[in-house]
Length: 71
Image (cartoon, rainbow, N blue to C red; front, side, top):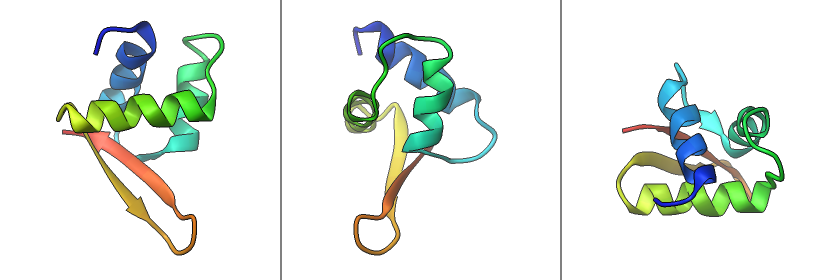
């Protein structure tokens, strides 16, 4: 985790009282950082999950959605 977006996303997820969908994380991060896209947010969240800094889970049928929460 080296870039500013990852730091912002980690802060957003860590400060949430409940799990957030990717879209919710994107909206909250967009208030703190410019140029945020859903694709960037999803990839950074996936990286943070891979590093063990947050947790995430795929839910729902079809395309479904990812939810994210603090570890």
